[in-house]
Structure formats: structure tokens, C-alpha cells
Image (cartoon, rainbow, N blue to C red; front, top):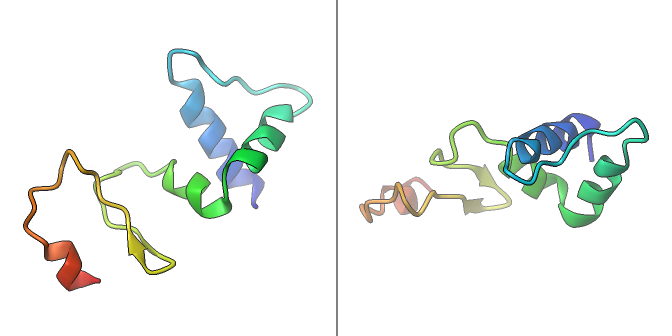
Length: 76
């Protein structure tokens, strides 16, 4: 898993109320590596979670933004 993806995820998590700060030892990246696959880490760092992500033959759809039009099914 690339360090860039993990670092992006760490920065995103650090914006939440509990935080997930960077450390000198980079132990936070090892924790994330054990908790997330590379694909999951990349999905969690999307700037627009409502966009469709085609990876491993699935689409990630923001359920709150979904209107039920099923356009995503046609696109898949």
C-alpha cells in the first residue's frame, strides 16, 4: 500500500473530533495499514464521496445523495 494513500487517510481522519495525528514514528500509518486495504483507504479519501468509483467491479454510492434513479446500474 502506498504511503501517500495512507497519509491522505490519516489527514482526513485527523479532521474528525477525536483526531488521528501524525507521529514522528509513523505508527499511525502502520495502524491504518492493518485496518484498511489499499482500495478502502483510497475510497475513504475521495474529495467527492457521491461520485461513482469503479474498482473491483463495484460502485461506491453516497446513500444520502442517491435518488434511486438507477443510472449507476446502467453505467456499470
